[in-house]
Image 1 (cartoon, rainbow, N blue to C red):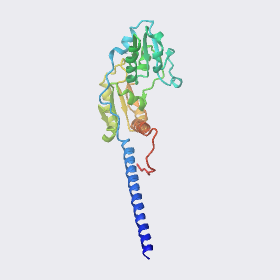
Image 2 (image 1 turned 90 degrees about the horizontal axis):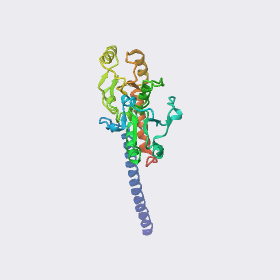
Image 3 (image 1 turned 90 degrees about the vertical axis):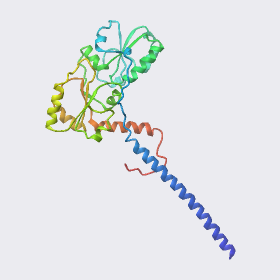
Image 4 (image 1 turned 60 degrees about the vertical axis):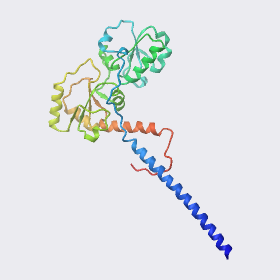
Length: 287
């Protein structure tokens, strides 16, 4: 009888140890899941900030006036990416930005790069590197293809719309001004920079916007002066039909409005933060 109770006691003790171990594992799993959920949610609240613009080296960049004074032997190079999918071919030399270092036959020539106008940060750093590698007279055209169209008086298919990617990329260096229409304060907080004006959606605002632009001088020799942002694409299209705004490449709309921008940022942040990894445990996440 004593042997029976002894075995029973051992089994109960063993079961308690196993149960305690399983509970510890479950607790750790729950903690890991909670951390993953919180990290996943945090991705949607860390919005990019472009309040402090990165300065460009002025000796690298040519304005449209400076470009007009260049000699005829200048070598223009289109460095825009995905050229095969672009409508606006420029009939000039095309070399990807990351291939320029190998083109030593250009080292002694005056070379001017034509980009989209939004990748100024990348081009500025590339020129700095290439000048150290051997390029003697390497520059870029401020405003890229949009300035090129004015310089060469070419009728290129340039719309008054910029994509969320261009908005975020260009905002790192371009001193444009943001105008929001119909956005709430919490919406504005997700933008990379604060607007100079925020109009509501009303007939009175339509008159106020018209008056705003009537009293502003649009400099046709600049790149982009104003970016207009609405809540979504539907409202953007509605306002484009009803508002009287200067037909100028210096005044652009954000494609898809705030909704499109937020979707793009979330998508990019997810790609960066979740590349090559998954949730540590099979948690069920509800956001």
